[in-house]
Length: 151
Image (cartoon, rainbow, N blue to C red; front, side, top):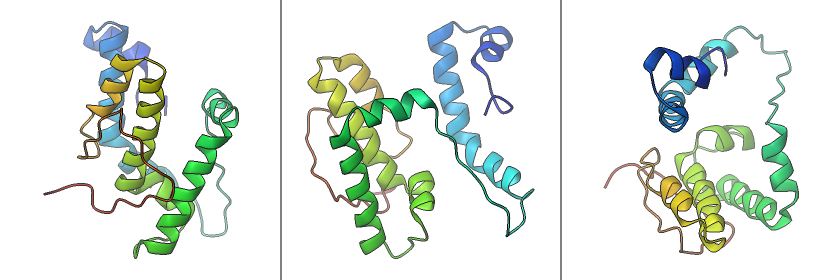
């Protein structure tokens, strides 16, 4: 991803501070990541193996929260069982807006319950998924939101 955008480059070239540059990077990734991944994957053959390496800190945080892992697993299973366009867990994890909106909400809700309300609202106010949950709302496991964009 550093080939696509880096915080330091944005701070220097666009003249933003760390917070503004981080928001810029996140929006840039939101707009560009799908096309970039498609281009990168074009370099692989059908019989190649791909390994997606998640940042260790992110996975470590989840490993310390088994209830969060269980919620994500139940939501993935719900997508497999009920979503007509489901191809694979990876496909769902990387591109289903409803699934991603639900997981973003779970993180925002956890922050809300830890009295980290400003950060929770920052996540909630992102319009990337075109869905609006109040971070104080608790949702259960096995949730499937389809077509989160539109009216």
